[in-house]
Image (cartoon, rainbow, N blue to C red; front, side, top):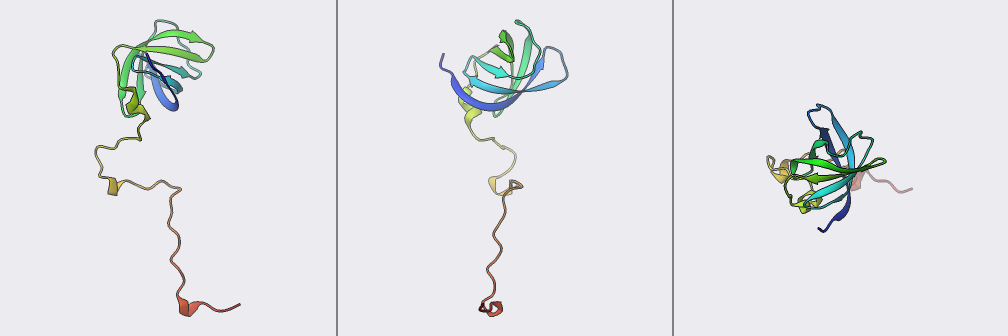
Length: 117
């Protein structure tokens, strides 16, 4: 199965645990993924993964090596959706809040208020 190498963040919940653990997704396919993080799991643990633009995906831990884990999804997903920009179905594009780093240049000065140096 083809895998896409990428870098995105996801949240994983282990079995009936309430805490979400943030992990880095290193590669993703329709049938599974490899994640990296300080998560303590064992092979066979049931997990729920929250992926951007996809939602919560149930699966199980297929392998563990150091701080990396392989997860097999219960059902195939469309892994290309996770590569797309974050979807906002509830808000029209014009009403989206600009990021904090976005700003506008100040208006040009009035010609009458300029002086030569």
